[in-house]
Length: 303
Ligand SMILES: Cc1cc2nc3c(=O)[nH]c(=O)nc-3n(C[C@H](O)[C@H](O)[C@H](O)COP(=O)(O)OP(=O)(O)OC[C@H]3O[C@@H](n4cnc5c(N)ncnc54)[C@H](O)[C@@H]3O)c2cc1C
Image (cartoon, rainbow, N blue to C red):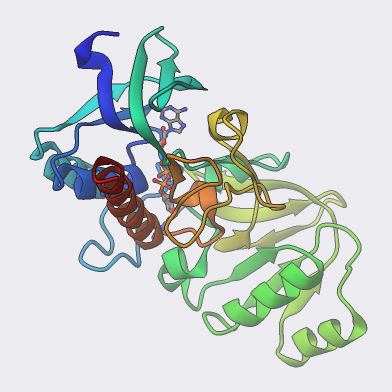
């Protein structure tokens, strides 16, 4: 393999987690390649919140600034492509991309994030990250005291209703079918003036991602400003699993406190490893994985 294609570390995914890992490694003079398709999960959201120093900036502003800062470290290179396969080699790993390039490195960091799977309700995908919200800490303050809904049922619907009740007193839980709340949960919600609507949803009426009404299958409608919802997800990349990395029951890449997977030399960080989904957490985990990969390289040299 050509010298140009050989690195100490390959980071797959160059968003918040990947760039944070790259900064720690660049500052340790490591020869690093970031392979990225530049499709972070929050790209549809108008403003990113709750990341200190950059609260309220657009997702793009945050990643552009991060990339500019990482680009200062001359041992870090970038390659815009989709990593599609990974194989174990004698000294580490080979990673191949969609455009048929192969790169090798001793260590791999997966900072590939997750892909949200939109439910099959018309209008939902357009509103995702704009007026349909996954996390109250990220976007709840902006819709405080507004007419708000929660799309959920059972324990999730109950727990989320309790939390959002602190942000608005005009709250409705939409169970989208028969409620699976317990009698006790139902009583607690109604005691706190949280309404429960079981009617099945037909679609979300919206303009440019901003909700106007929820239209129900029985022909009625409910005007609304914001809805909280959780969606299912899949891993963006199947390479970790194919290399033998264990996944948790929920589908995250299993890592220890130092972002190590069960496969030697393979690390993972950011959304692909945890339900704690925030820019701050991705940056933290990337930073740890960069430092730990550097440490592993140091230890190997002094063995
Ligand atoms: C709609 C929405 C709004 C959000 N709002 C906020 C907010 O206001 N505040 C906040 O703190 N958090 C927010 N979050 C959470 C935050 O965006 C994530 O926690 C964060 O983006 C995770 O960073 P990451 O680097 O792990 O993954 P991502 O940012 O998703 O980046 C993954 C990167 O890997 C690349 N990639 C994936 N697979 C491959 C491959 N095989 N080859 C090459 N490249 C690949 C992708 O293109 C992408 O660039 C929001 C999330 C969503 C979904």
